[in-house]
Length: 220
Image 1 (spheres, helix red, strand yellow):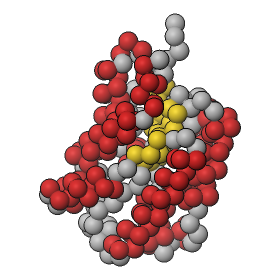
Image 2: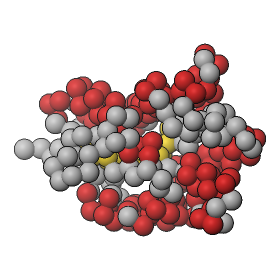
Image 3: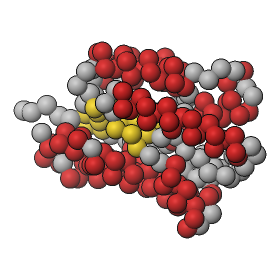
């Protein structure tokens, strides 16, 4: 039997979204964008019986993700790793919390990618852009939020180019969506997506991956 394709989604609460955590619950991907993407790809490529995993954990920063990378990524030997992380790094910096005293986003994200390329050189990588809109949790200091989001976006685009990853732009998509109706319709507190927000993420993810060379990955 041909090896099944394994796709791993990881990150913070936006990815977590109530996923199963008990043994044997890997099929329960939560109520967010990983479940929507898995639903679409699982249907399209049913003959290949792809496996989808969710290892998002609410509240995680890139340092938390890096700390658990062996257990929750490398050891699973996925064929594709999709990462959405960064908003909690910004959140802690904006709130002046001790855990945000230094910005480790680029440094640790680079370490994470270097290790992955070393141990899983053939794994496809998808880097999703952190995003926010001005709502209850982000309205105060919104210009600073925007500045940091732009910096993180530029960092991720550079890392994606360096490590041969697909970059999924999300901020512009949410900006356009907020022109249709208010920000909280998409991100209820400015950070966490509603059902419509998760669908937008899934749509942009699929567009970016399908435009890339990774589309042949699902057809091998």
